[in-house]
Image (tube, rainbow, N blue to C red; front, top):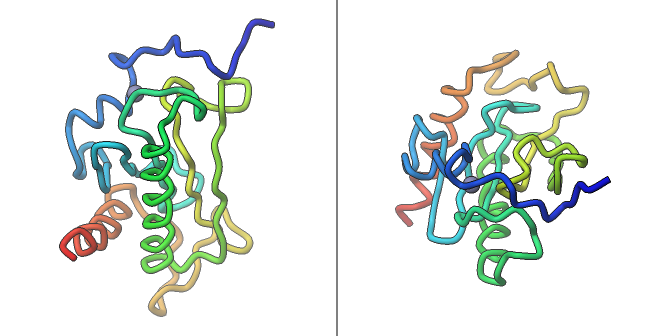
Length: 157
Ligand SMILES: [Zn+2]
């Protein structure tokens, strides 16, 4: 077995996250917020609605290669993500985590990403009552625009 968590064989050029970064924040990239050190993107293949990914802006595979500033920037964006998803979706709970390396389940191991997954009792196909209407599911575009609106308000402060 030669697989290593530190594998950095996946290059920047064919990295979907680095390609999204080139587009900048918005509906096309699904990036909700971005700064020099970290960014937050809506997962294209969500386990649940409003499943966020928080990543270093640098194409880095392993947590141990991040600087302290990058670690802090990521944690701050996770915190913001929790606050905004709570505000918009009122989930019962969250799963937070990293799959470090392909053998751990990382589909895109070349660019480290933290998962922020809102959870509801009895999910994944159940969506809670919101504003009196039962929403069974929503499109990625709908999720993006709902979260985008709140991220934009936050940035104006
Ligand atoms: Zn990348």
